[in-house]
Length: 298
Ligand SMILES: Cc1ncc(COP(=O)(O)O)c(C=O)c1O
Image (cartoon, rainbow, N blue to C red; front, side, top):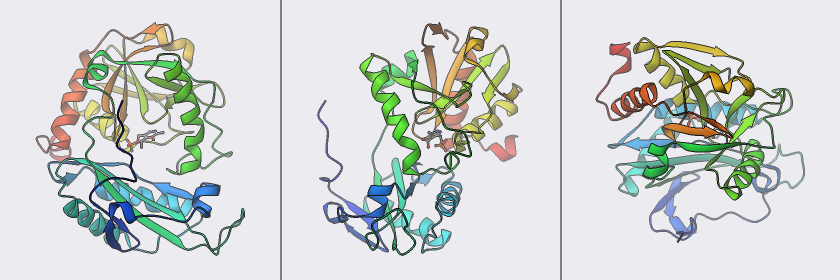
């Protein structure tokens, strides 16, 4: 696979209040965000020139920063305007938006109160998180070794760098074993989510969704559950145990990057059904492209 390194691309990155040439958006090696994971971020998608739920993502970025005990030195309106600026500068119509904020280099140690807060926004073309073949066939998922910590052990509802460390470890292990993804259980052994998307199950006309107590209640998850309700499916949010997997005929993940993507298997359990998943994939696609209006249709 030939990779285009992310530090060697054309275009512009919005960095601390102005657009800078992509390759010049640099930070020093000694920084709190880098060493102590004091960095929060968002992942957003631009469809036909419009960010899907852009304001909600900005709100979450600010909430994540607050949870990490720092204040983003801009207003939410300013960040929304900056996203538009970055998109325009890169002439993007469809793609991915990555706003992030982190503690700088003034102080190097666990305490970080004196560090300046930096903000950057990068945008790039990113057609699909998974290959089209993998998407339609469904993901193969392996249960990971690392579990989502208890909500009083880590700020699990913030989209912050630190919580992804175990995701990378699980994802590496899954990929090394020939799977696409990794299932994260929570600290009690209940089904939580995958490494970068929420996980939902289907049984007849019921959607069973793990309660987001130890993981991010994704903006896509919330949207898809609304779409499911609109379709007349029964949404059941509850604790789901791994031994219940044989009860379900379909499984799928939701996320800004993953959108709605079927799951083919989790360990030895197969999920051959696609009926409900396909309906929700189409509804989500219609929604993000403005062909469906959720409020009017709900
Ligand atoms: C760990 C994790 N869970 C769930 C999600 C889905 O969240 P959203 O639908 O808001 O993109 C993401 C993506 O941001 C994620 O990284």
